[in-house]
Amino acid sequence: MSNKKRYSMLASTAAVAFILAACGNGDTEDTTEETGNGTDTSEEVEDESGEDASAGDEVEPVEFDTRVENEGEAIDGGTLSIGYVSDSPFTGIFSTELYTGNPDAVVMGYMIGTLLGYDENYQIDDSGAATFELDQETNTVTMTIKDDVLWHDGEPLKAGDIAFAHEIIGHPDYTGVRYSGDLANIVGMEAFKNGEADSIEGITVVDDKTIEIEYQSVGVQMLQAGGGVWGYAAPRHYLEGIPVAELESAPEIRENPIGFGPFKVDNIVPGESVSYTAFEDYYRGAPKLDRIELETVPTSTAVAAMENAQYDIFEGMPTDQYENYENIPGYTNLGVDDTAYTYIGFKLGEWQEAETDEDGNIVEPAQNVYNEDAKMADKNLRQAMAYAIDNDAVGSRFYQGLRRRANSPIIPNFSDYYAEDLEGYPFDPDRANEILDEAGYKDTNGDDIRETPEGEELVINFASMSGGEVAEPIVEYYMQSWERVGLKVELLDGRLHEFNSFYDRVEADDPDIDIYQGAWGTGFDPTPEGLYGRFAPFNYTRWATEENDELMEAMTSTEGFDIEWRAEKFKEWQEYFMDELPVIPTLFRKAVTPVNNRVGAYDITVGEDPDTEGVGLHTLYLISEDRATE
Image (cartoon, rainbow, N blue to C red; front, side):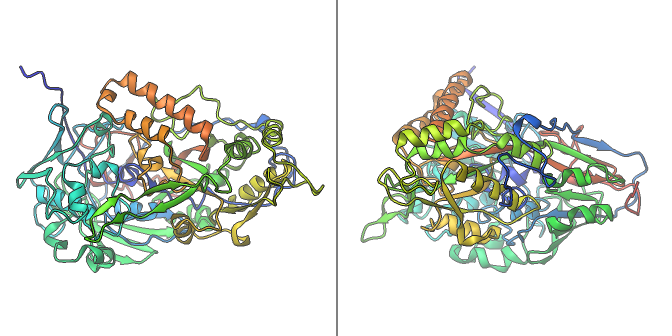
């Protein structure tokens, strides 16, 4: 018997799972209901009545079921109505290679189809569209498409479509943000990216169903969904004639997209709604529903929409309003620990585009460049700002116990790698003052505001997004908390910013932004390289150090196949990260999904196989023509 270390498994097209799986190493998360600023004037966080909401007055954490089954006979067909709660319109980029924001991931999730599924630990398993085999000895991944997987126009999904997705991202004219160290790890990818080769050496289409991809090195993270292997396909026959630089605006992406998921797009009203019809030739079986209608719902009207039973399922229901909808008749609230966290980031440098020679060849890759003279470069200042804010109270009071203070940028869902014992930055304004005093931030003119150690005025510009009811109160609370320790923090342009314009400015390293508040969907791989690596475009802080590089390399090395060894490296990195503190992880969170009682069964359990005990989009059914109101 061969002594090769081989890992064989299957992959899935579970469309709902795609919403965060596509984040892989980091996708922007729609944070319209979880960022903000407002009007708190007390020494502690207060609710609207002025009642003390300090960490000592915590609300008990809320526990949820992850599955609901309602009694009744399935009706024939029917239309499922989904309310996607967001104050940010979806851009309408129906492409895994080109989209950036979570709103687009949500609307794509019902139709796009994926290759790589996962179990309850987010590890690639046997639940889907293609077999997956990782050969550690030869540094290769082999994917073999299963029978009868078709694109929505009836053409078969081919191995060449998986290759084409890689070619789009690696093309010199690619305009998206998906190119990362994971893709550069493919043999020959950098030569293709630099225009030095017409094809990617390490990608071999063996036949219509089988593709082999050779990497320079493989790591254990590649066994995780979204953990280093690009697990999506793009229809070569449908898109190949469009120049890569023009793909993002092409009607084949924006108006008439195709996928291989259980539903196909019927009509799009940009930013507002999408209509889907059942794809009768879906390889797992024809959907039981006839149609899905998805509409965006502002956070301000979401509760009223639920009270009026306007939708069967609410995606992204704001947790800051949970007490207003937890007992609305006709609905069951399901919930899971979200694969996401909110954070406050410090701008510490800038993104440097790739340097090329006179022939256009890349001599220095695009990367994050740390600026030791940045306003927020002193980690003492960053640590003091973390101690000055009470995120235990924010999670307890503003989110009724559905969020809690984060102590790490690794979420608890990744239990093998999460540093549970790490203290993080609990509320300690005395410690904040002490750190600032020792670092030389002093009030030199008697106005209760600290100057820099050089005696210069210190004004910190804070960018955050508009959103739900707590958007303004939370940011205002943060700013006032910082003021109480002598730091002057002002809201960028004196207002909150809409999701897309906010991220445009953050990505562009707008010099007017010193700190910003956002959230990350982590995807299903704990490896943080795509969010905090030197070559990661999503590393919006632009923090980069040699020690961070070394720890990132260790976490993705072949030694990492020893899980205990890898877990230790993760914990080393978390300790280092939380000391350097390029971002303050603020809140871990629950995701709540209200489901109307006319839906026969709905399951958001992580890793459930819809062909066995789970519920997939193609198996959804209704038990009544009318939406339940009790």
